[in-house]
Length: 287
Ligand code: ADP
Image (cartoon, rainbow, N blue to C red; front, side, top):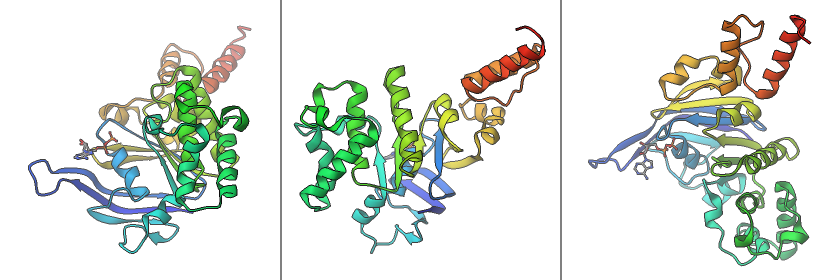
């Protein structure tokens, strides 16, 4: 299932004094099974873009084809689009409302008018996919859970729709470091084990460097960079000009190199940096 976005333009409140061009001629292809990160300063157009991919917003101009079907056409049913494309909003736990975890996750599949056995199967599977034990959590109130667990319940509610494409808007925002790690690991497993196409909106360059295979950078409604982590994070000047940065560890490696250490500057994760530094030390006979 591929996504083809062609010359997408979105203007909020057109022909009013508040008119705002939020997407300006965005063209982007995402293939089946990709893991893409979407980054950009606040207001760069990320939320507007992802809401077009699941049909929540209609473009002012341009098209979006999912698996060859132009979803901007009037005759396309949005319920069909949402079966294919799941969108997890920022702080999705604020939208939990049922008395039990099971009922909350079942809400989406129930609207698909599925048999109750099928709904139960999906809820169980979705909970397993996000790492929540079904028997332990199913009858608990979502409100008695920790922040990270609540967020998993909310993500499970979208996963239970069994979308092939999962879009997550800042899924680690506001969690403690352990909660962040756990959610990120689950997203990676949704991609690797369950073969979902992932589009991850994030402000954390560290997270993005760790998990994404491709990074799309937005600025003022346009895509200004689009490539592998190496292609994007080596363009530090461009990133800094638009208020972004490379991962912190990349700056450390740059500084070490300037001090004469024999290390590569093209390092974007702590793991890679560790390996690179140890090798440099070994080369210099320090160990
Ligand atoms: P991001 O997700 O990157 O922070 P958004 O897509 O939310 O960016 O916003 C892009 C631009 O559109 C911003 O200038 C923002 O103020 C504007 N905008 C977003 N939502 C609305 C809206 N509902 N009405 C009017 N302007 C909006």
